[in-house]
Image (tube, rainbow, N blue to C red; front, side, top):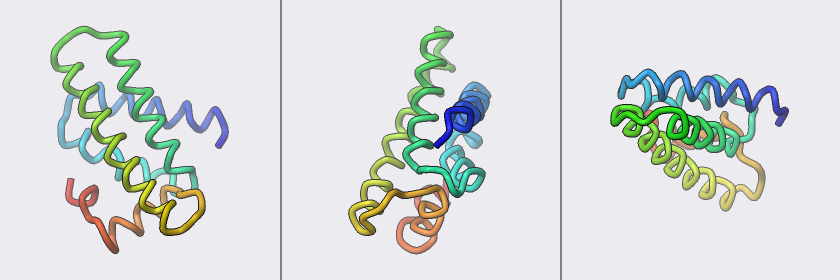
Length: 112
């Protein structure tokens, strides 16, 4: 994964998390997997975690802290999906793999 691509992903996550719109935030993982289907799925986790950490460092209001906490939770949940897929498939998981997994086995992120 290229650094500039990871930067774009992180900026996208910052934008969504800082919106404070719960509907947009809970759809963040799904949107990122669809927007970057050929990128390492762990990059999605990293970008969301980095975005949440940035918000925590730059802002000190309760609404932003709730958005950051939700970002951390989403990153942790998608990390468990990535581990499941890597264990089953024995290879690096990309965004497209997540979308397929969610459609076939675990629709959690599709329902958010």
